[in-house]
Every structure is written in structure tokens, then in C-alpha cells.
Length: 495
Image 1 (cartoon, rainbow, N blue to C red):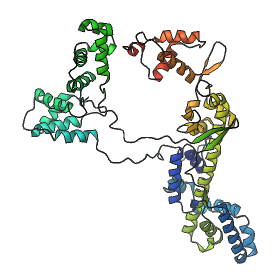
Image 2: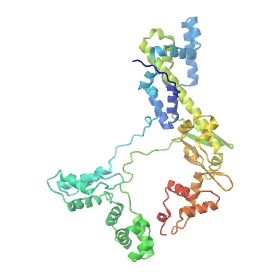
Image 3: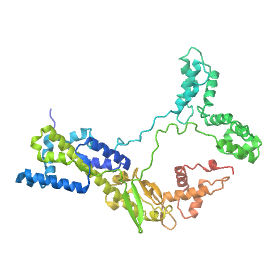
Image 4: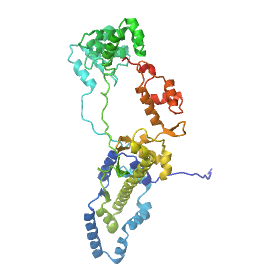
């Protein structure tokens, strides 16, 4: 039985041009340059702009040629090429072109069907290199090991984590290797092989915990000083006190002087707690500023970094082919030219719109944070995305796209645009101060504290309140943790 129903829905949809603009808006300058290169390769109707004088000469030559060849009706039509072309595309879009085809097309800028999902991110290719694991395998094969020892050594090496530690259960590794060899490897035999690996370069690799890692490095040190011997005693006999930095208890249990304790700690501090750290890094990210901010006679001048962004234009030859020779073209060719023409126009428009939006956002940031741009750190004001959005009449999501991943080069250094945004904290005078400034104050207090008696979070809160900041202890703890500063107990140092 047939049932008919009627529903009413309100939906918000983005046109392909809007999607194109949103994707391009959030691209940093290096990714934008690569995006333009890709688009130039994929779209034959898009090309880099030429010199204005040369372009003017070409336009005059083309107009003269058209005047000689075209009928009066054609001349009237050519006077409004842009309007005519737009009309042609609109009138024939249902016949030979659809949005579905635009979304499904995998070429050029027409391959966008959703918000930015990271597909356009590209990393700089890295040169081939020998990994730490491969270096360890080479070192192992230079040792005089039996076949079963080599198999076990390989299994250990390929179970080492990126930080250089062997977190996998050692007995399980041995059991897996025993299934491949006729010799039944005991745990004692396996420990002997592991000990030889741990003393390869870098020493301490494949350690199962921090204590073992540090002890191995102390064991292979060439010097036999008293400080080294005391350091090994500290790690073996007073590990719990060492972790908690209970210096007085270490001195009492080991019967050593404060001076010797300091020397032993200097030896331990020279060791590497993560022997494999950094070996898994595949690339180095370089910051290229998207804006240059300078002062000229007291006024701030904003320059968008577009050194590698070429001017773009629609290819005139293809454009004239579609305008004046369309009757000679078959349906498939007209469809292709219309599609690429529209993609090229959208792409060029998106680039221009991106430039205007970014300059508007950066100008407003400077206006809101003028004191910081004039005087530097210590003058940051509370600012949120909504403040900028309300000022320039844009959506908060647009501001977020502009800010994220973009950098500005100022006379005070290179800063990410997100740096200028932070919530405010009230002072006794009623003034709002950015929380980044409060964090800087907390760090300054900690840097000047007595290393033997570090300040607790409660003590930090009291000092801040004396300075006029209405802040709770849990907020101080949150800011301290956000800056990567440990609790007072772990900040205790020997001086």
C-alpha cells in the first residue's frame, strides 16, 4: 500500500565555491604554494599571470582580430565576455554539468566534497637514513654470537620502543624465539645476550626501566672516580629516595657528605635517560611566517607572505575557444572546458578572498593587541575568537581557520597567531589580564625560588594574590602543569 508523507526541514549547505574557499583559507603559505602548483598542473585553463603591459598588448591584439573577424552580433556579445560566459555555464549546467560530477571529479580543485580533513598536508621529503634499529643489528652481527643468540638479539632489537626501552615482556620474547630454534634458551642465557646489547652504542639501549638504563651507562663509563661509584650506590641502594629527591635521607643511608652528593648527582645528570629519543623523528618542521608586521612612522604595516604565490589568470586561448568557437566543439569538449573554466575561476576567487580575510583578521588582532606589538611581552590583553569575529563580521569558525597554523613575524620574534588569544583573569583593580601573562609571572617566580626549598602551589597562589591577581590554587596548578613545570618536591635541586 502506498503512503505519502510530507516533512519540512531546514538545512544549511555549502556551495562548491565556499568549500574551495574554506580549504584554501586554512592552508599555511607553504601548503598554499604547493596547492597552486598542483592546480596549475591539473587545470589547463589556469595559468600564471603575465606582465600587465604584455597582457594589455595581447588584449588589444585579440580585440583587433575579433573586430575584423566577427559579425556585429558577435562583436556585441564579445563586449561582455565574462557575463556571457557565466550565462552560458549557468544555462547549460543542467544539460552537461552537475554538482555530483564536480564533487566526484578527482582532478584539481574540484575534488573537494567536505571540510578540510588534512588531505592537503604535505611534508618535506626526508633523505634516506639508517635507523637506530638497523645500526644495532649491524653492531650485533659484528659480535661473536651463535645462531640462536643472533635470533634472540634480533628479536630483542625489533621489540625496542622509540624511546630506546624494552617495554615488552622479556620472558615472552624468549619463549617466541624458543619456538624457532632447537636449542632451549634459558632466561639466564637470554639475560647474557640482553646485557651485551645494552652495552652497544648508545649504551643503555634496550633497558627495561630507567634505573637499569642509568646503571648500564654508569657501568660503561671509562672513569673510576669516587663520584661515579657513589652514583652507582645511590641508584642501587637508595633508588626510592633518589626518585623523590629526599637528599637528606640519601646522605644518612649512604654516609656521604653533601659535597660528594652534589658530585654524584652531576654524574647522574650527565647520563641519557632516553637513549633512543629522537631516532624516530622523520622530519624537521621549519616555521615560515604567513605575515610580516613592521612599524613605519608609528603605524603598523602588514605584509602577507606571498613570495612564492604567483598571480593567476584564466588561459585566454581556451577561454576564446569556449566563447567564439563553441559551435565547432563537440559536447564532450564543451563540457570539459566549462568544468575547468568554472574550477579556475573559483580557485582564483578563493585566493583573492583568502588574502582579504587574512589581512582583515591580522589587522584586527594588531588593533586589539596594540600594546603588545608596541612594547612586547608583558602587555598581552585577553582576547578570544569571538572578539575578532564580531569586529569584522565573520563566523568564529572562519577566524579559527585563519589563526590555526599561521605565524606572524614581528619585531619581537615569530609567533603563532593563537598566541595572541587567551582568556582573562581579573585583578584587584578590576583590570583584565591575559592568562598567558599570569603564566609568565608564575614562571618568573619559580625561576627565582630557592632551589633547596621550592615554592608549593599554595605559596605561589599567595604571592600572586599579593600582586593583585584573584586566582585559585587549582588554577595555579593547572597553569604550572601546562608549562611543563613539576611539583615543588621534584623541583628541589642541590646547589
